[in-house]
Length: 493
Image (cartoon, rainbow, N blue to C red):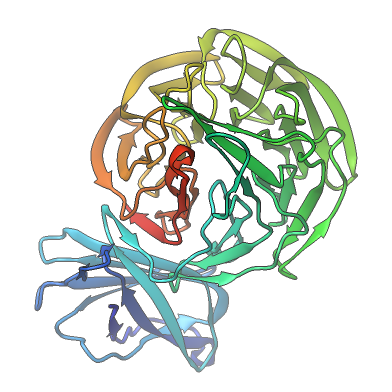
């Protein structure tokens, strides 16, 4: 059930020449905060008290702000005298009379035509909670999400839900070529172009021109479980050295240069506008201790030696082309730093876990490293705050739950969303989430996903929300059960 409300108001603002201005008919689409099989709840706005603040921004003019009463404007009209242009953004905040924010939404890339009324549809989600999107998605795990120009997001690859047996307590899952594009303005997914090859445990990076470079991966993966613990492996001879690029203009993939070494479970990071550092991973027979600097414009590739062999690690870029790598299947657990084409081991910090998550917060100048699976195949609750410039640990924390197969997402309010994942050695999937405030270095809120998820794709959006897509809902090869979600949800801070 979706409640539609067309907001109406007229702004009498200065526009130097009327023929250079247009109008926007702003339509808001509310989605339920929960979508369950037997119950649906709808975001309710207090009658006669809810206020909607519509803000229109763009290059070359001051923000246009209009406050409207929901009760006084139930049937719709337009917001006028907006300078024409193609780079307009329209944001909406829903507040009650006491100023408490109830919901918000934003869309970008709006075209305002002079002398015309331009329809603008905005998806509004309730703040501080997860809301499930109406559109079903491709069921897959370990897909990769990447931002696209205009505020949309591209979901690529991952493992599908058709397992085949690979021994006692073992299932093998094939990768997919499929992609989807999410539009935050409408809250819907559309089918994207297929990649040239099926991929899982690959990486994707956005270059300076908005194109997305897709690197390596495998066309299948295996999940093996005993009575007490589970693990993920990549079969020999299925690791890729191929690279392909998504062109956001033509909306198509094309193949380009290849890696010098096939890699899956690696990391890749921008160390220049069109230069990437691809590190570690596996070639099919264990962790790699090599890295490659790839110049995507020149097609060149320079091999480097890492301080330790590692796969399924995490990495963050900070400063001018410098890099912090931690975790992965390494014997020492030591972190290492990349600077001036040299890797150096840090004796001051360790991360003895693989499949950890990490983010770098520019505003704070810190990196956060958390979660993962330890040598005993147990998810860990460790949460470490690092100063990568000084190469020191600032503080250690413990998450409320141990987690692996998770993603950290920086929200629009600067907090970090930590959601889902597995919480036990037998791959129990979680539906809980926490919010970490880096300013006070503390977990400040506990939240609940609309569905249990691990190995999901996640992407922060331009409107400050977080998109969470698909992922495992159940992982139990011993019982012959592998279930993957076909839903997606938003968290709006």
